[in-house]
Image 1: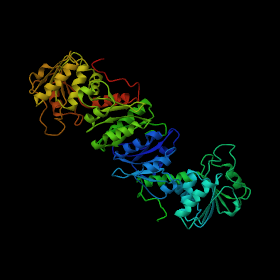
Image 2: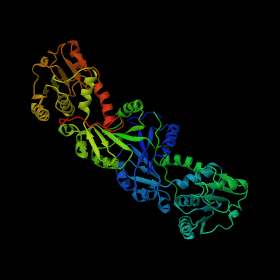
Image 3: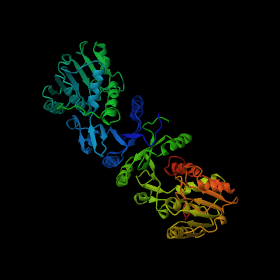
Image 4: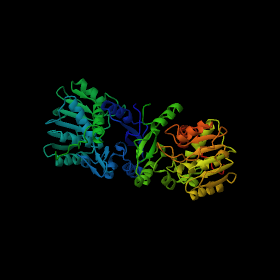
Length: 277
Length: 277
């Protein structure tokens, strides 16, 4: 850890609870690699104190921004002064930049990080047919990011079909070039280029599989949003059938750099891409 | 620097400007020495944002407290929920503890740090006759701390006599056992056990001396509140006349531990002593 001085820029992670977060350590590595005189510190804020905490941070002129995590991502959308990219469509913000005038500019980088992780592994979602399991927060972020990355077709699979159909309709409206549909049951699992699990199934031992695995095959990529365990039962089943497996960790690694960039700690604070360009 | 994790308690220093502060480095040494998993970070807050910044910090449950420095010390008195010791009488707060319920508890430790520095050097103000040059913020804090430490007599010297008389009257009211008087001119400089400079004279090269030095002698302690330069013209003149010199730095070193204690980072958050005991 480099020394903190009066010149050091301040960044935070807002969460409740806070003790489990690993972002301070991971961001310290990013700052060290880029020669940034900054420090990211844990800020334990409960939901009912979120607005007041945010308003306080506006007044700290050496405060660059923060990462928002559970349970603050949906609420943060309504508290930001502006959002970039698809955050409003996704309905959540997980990274906030404090501009010099105190304005708080949000972005939702979960899905963009997932796509960056795919690309870093040489997997291009452009033109791909994608099956996405889940229609919750993580799945919404990934759905919009896949569509933004040029996925040709996106089938969203969710036990409650209406939720999948609603997400698909919102994706299709923002990205008409992506043929998005929602389903309550999995048909033709073998018919997709990329299969993604964005449910929480696989997090706990004994969870059912998020989708039927029998039809998975060697011509497919099977990707996880779950980071721990690194090999979920889905990935194990996919590997057994010869599919290319993409674990959840690269999403986190890619996202931390995107977050540092959004907060202006490294490089230019490039806006997250949206349908407009 | 130890690693910052989700378990690390957060502390701050609020100042405007901020870049020159050295407290993050000094407190990092204190935390390391005491094995505290905490970090003190710079928070650049302008006067018009002070209340809002403070209200935001109330909502951070892992935030232990902060140091307030120029220009925030007088304003902080009015923003705290309660103050300990003589802070209200001095009219300033320089250290604030955040209690678990979000209440902000202020203390003014400048003078207490000065007295602790004297004591650490084996100089006991108890029963002493003290000449104090200055009646501003630093002098007020030192005057009350000397009286609380049992100084028998305190002469406060200030170009504007009324300001010295006012401070002396407030000290005498709080500590009737201390014979406090205010003066506009220095008489009988050789008649005191301890002579203290709490003006800013000596900070800049070419400053006039804060008091006449001709009568200083080997039976006296001459103490500085100025830290840089370490040997002021007053101390040089005192040394030349055989007086025992006490520089300004120990005040800072002692105070940083008092601050860590007030914020609950080390030991018990013992209340700063006041006239009540």
